[in-house]
Image (cartoon, rainbow, N blue to C red; front, top):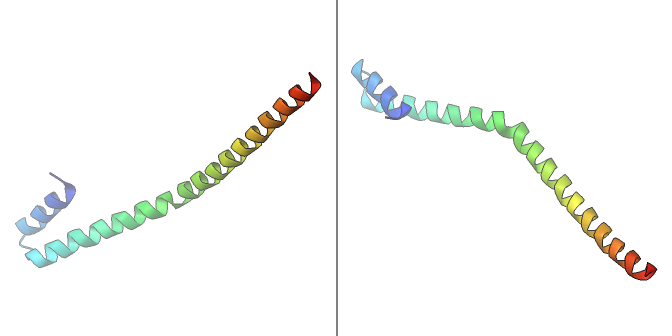
Length: 76
């Protein structure tokens, strides 16, 4: 059973009206989603930076390999 169902059932067992129990569960889900987003914001930024660096390194490596091939061909 998910935490939402367990929470809803616990609220209903102490006589909280169904609509209020549903509202509490929805608010808790929203709060958790917001906190997860906030916690991951810095990590997402770091991943974007690393993706940019890896792309740049791939381009530099490709150019270097191409130039190396041309230099080897010319020096033969």
